[in-house]
Every structure is written in structure tokens, then in C-alpha cells.
Amino acid sequence: MAEAANEHLAPTYLLSANHIGKLERGVVDRPSAPRRSALRTICGVQTDAEIGFERHKWRSSVPLPSRSAAIEARPSAEPAAVIAVSTDIASPALTDASPPAGWRVVGYLAVRDEAQLPAGLPIVAASATQQALDEPIIAPASPPVPDLGDYPGGEWNSFLTVTRLLASQRQAVAPAVLLSLVEAHRDCLATLFRQAEHDPLRSHIGAMVAEASIVASRLWSAQGNRPMALAHCARARQLGDDLGNHALAATARIFESNLRSDAATLIGRSGDIADGLRLLQEAQALSTALGPAAQARLAAEQAQIFAVLKLPRECDEALERARSAAAGITERDRSGLFSDWNASRLGVYEGTCRLFLGEPKKAAHLLEGSVSHFASDSSNVNVGLAAQVDLASAYAQTEDLDKSCALLGDAYGKLVAIGNQRGVDRAERARERLNPWNSERLIRDLDERMAACRAA
Figure 1: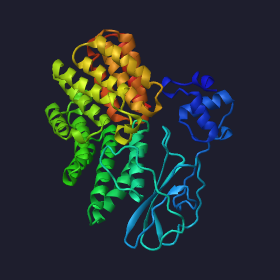
Figure 2: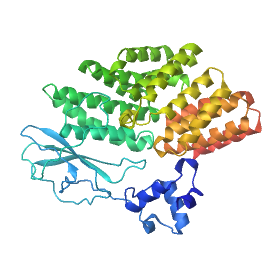
Figure 3: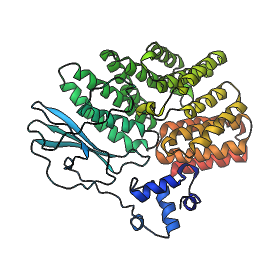
Figure 4: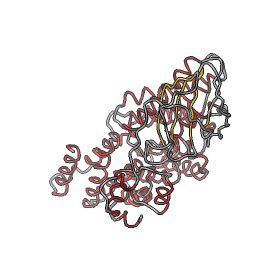
């Protein structure tokens, strides 16, 4: 079935036997639109409902799950907040029943730890001031990575689970879809932080506010709103500094540097490379508190800036530090803000550095491998498209205009479709590198294709 469906799918959406198994078991109950279309075609049906992909109608008011399938926190006599995360049921039945006495539902998010959101995993934020639940309390599992600082157990672990689950989806889900969920979660944490009075509890909540702010910053950036992206990242940096949380302070600087330098001007003209490099140096001074994934990203960002400045020795040294750190990344480290980091992700940076250093053939070789790898990785769509745009620029520098225009046109259409404005800006900068060949028919065809994408 996967092979038959793949005949109707672009490389980004290819299915495997594992994907089909998840559909059969109900682990995934509503795949992405291209996959649903391909499956309808090979099954000979007209609607999603005929093959079991009904759209779920989430209720505006939902109670806490009545069974112990959720991670629950017992309310105290003082105002508090709880998040209940159900992890062991594929399609929970939600009803209009009233929540338990003393509980008030104040927010609702529906997300799943898959590329397709939202579906399946209910996350209910509630406030309680009176009586305790009769249900038994189930201790939640520890978060996969304490990379941004240690957090207390119990109910606060549920907030951390949501924060990192949302963060892990930012490369796979359209920014506009995910942003409202992230901002709602961040607002809930920010309210708790303002109301908290005693340490160390306040510092733990503040750390989660900072982490959620960085996630929101990346999504605002993807939508092309640079001021909001900078504001969220600067807030995270201030919180990290105020709380004395070196891991968070360094992480915020890494992502803020990416914004300040506009990814070393590969995306926009308003970037300040010196400002970006300064923030990375500040992050490096705090880097002993970082895990290997964060250290790899830090060094890779430094390498990219050195490449833009035409400093090959410094670039190579930074890339070597990045490789060393990436070699230590385990599956446990790939969580939250760094869920998309591994040796393959570093390959995109290496290829881009070679592009900036005027080595287009080396750049093309590295980026071809990255594009091939990410073509089948539905959890890192944006990374794969960025690599495809840079590969198009490498082909342009080797004057292989056929490949350059084909790749750039394909990537541009996909970036426009998912609403990734930051990626669109990157692609439009890549188009500028083709200006020397503006009189060629291939370039005129590419311009028409890009204009049609914008109009659609």
C-alpha cells in the first residue's frame, strides 16, 4: 500500500510500511492532506470518511479524563494550575460532562507527537482552588532531556512535557497552525510565573516561560514577524540571566543570534553579523551548561558567520567543534528545541558554509546528501527545504541553471504553501543570485512559476 501511494506523492510525503502500520493501529488517525489524497486515490474512494480519516470535532469545553490514563496533579488549597496529558490512547472520547467540583477549564490544546497536528493527544489546562480529585495520582515520567535545566517532578513535569512536545513540532507543522498553541501555553505559564511567590518554584516556572518564549520566537520568525521574534527571544535571554539559569541564557542567545544576523544575511538584509557573533560568544562562555545538541548548534552558527566573513580557518575550527559535539548526541538529547539536531542537520550548515566560502562544488556535494536525507523525514520539512534552497544556489554558482531553477521553484512553492515566510525570504535571496542570467528563458520561467505560487 505504501509503494502504491508513493507513486502519487512528492518526496517530502513518501510513506513507509511503518506509516501504514500506524494508520492501521490508529496511532495516526488523520495523516497530512497529500497522503490522504494519495490513499483515497489508490483505494478508489472520494472522501476521507470512507477510509476512516474523519475530522475530529473538538469540544470547546472538555473535562479532565475520568480514567487514570492521564497525568494528573492534585489541586491544593492555594490557587494552582494543572495540565493533564493523555499518552496511551489514540482517539480519546471527549464529552460535554462538567469537570469535577472545584475545577474550571481555562484552556485547551490538541496536539500529537507526530508530524500531523492537531489530533489525538488531549492537553487540558485547568485552574483549581478547592477540593482534590478522587482519582489516583499517577507520577509522570521524567522529561527526556534536562538540557535546559533541572525541573521538579510531579505536576510541573506535565507543563514541561507540553512545552517540549510543542517545540519538537516546529520544523514539521505550518507556523500559523502551531503558533496559537504555543502562545496559549506560554501565556498560561507566564500567568503562573507572575503569581508565584516562593523560590525555587518561581525559578522553575520562569525557566519554562523562557523555553516556551524561544519556541514562540522561532514561529514568529517563520511568519516573517521579526520584531515579535526578537522580543520573545530577548525575554527568554533576560529570564535566563535573572534566574541564573546558564543553559537557558546560552540557548536564548544562540537563537537570538540567528535572528540578529538574519542567519548571517542568507535570509534578509537587516541582519547584523557582528551583533550575532557577539551573542554567540556570550553563549559560548556559558556553554558548559549545555548538552551536546545545543553545543553543536552553537558551533555551527559560529561557523556560518565566519564563512560569511570569509574566514576559512575560523570556520573550519568551528565546524570541527560542531562535529565533535554532534558525535555525542544521543536520542535522549533530541528533544524540544533541539529535537531536529543530529549529524545530518550539521551537514546543511557545512554545505552552506562552503557556499559562502566560494566552494560551490563542495557545497553541492554536501547539500545533495542533506536534501536526499531530509526528503523522507516528515518531521524536518523546513530543514529539508532550506537545504534545497541552498543547493539551488550552489548549482547556480556552478552554472547548472537547469537544476538550480528546478530545485528553487519546487522549494519556493512548498514554502509558500506552508506559510513559512522566513523560508520564502531565503528562497527569494537565492533567486537574486541568479540575476546574472536574467535574460535566459529558464530564469524567466522560474519567475513566472514563483509569481504563480504567490498568487495562489
